[in-house]
Image (cartoon, rainbow, N blue to C red; front, side):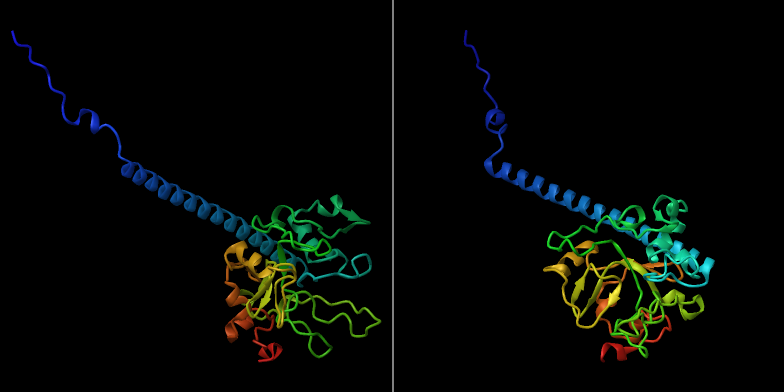
Length: 285
């Protein structure tokens, strides 16, 4: 009797294994997918940080509106008379930051004060801290580093008695005599001609002509130089070349550095100045 052997299917052994080319293709596909996922996660993380920063400046804008409603003037950049209880601006604290912090946190003067006067905020915390603002290692220790700045001067220019600042931090230059300190007077609410088109507080960037620093304040300044090697690159990495800014009416925008610091159109220049004029003479144009 003849026993018939069952023949193996031709595909049974050879087809079970992947070829080297197939393995490489699978690995390449997995690599592409991983890269796409990481890019999506990185983008989502940037979006969350950007939203956080926008919410911060929006809260600072709300505090500014409340301060103006209470006092009919804007906070001083620095209040040299903050310890003189007879001064009409005694309650402003030592700076615009302490003035707003008393609104953001009503218990602040009691928590951090000397003789009832709020102390200057030395470090970023809470609403004052942008999650993307990391102190650069190249920055000398003697230079402070904080997240947000005020628009105190408008278009920056060397001050004198006939060329007063046009921002929000005060309306008289405090050094009319080299040996005498003449305190600034605050800017009145009515002096801001177009609150919806006047920048008030934003990410702490200063710049012009392609150079950006992140230690000076919210300032457009002719002939500005990097305050440490790589400050422009560091500033661009924070919000991808943009700044979050709250205006005097409380709305928030995120203009590019080019719009803020290099656009010489009247529309761009007016946004720095409380009288809503371009003052291009201050740029030497």
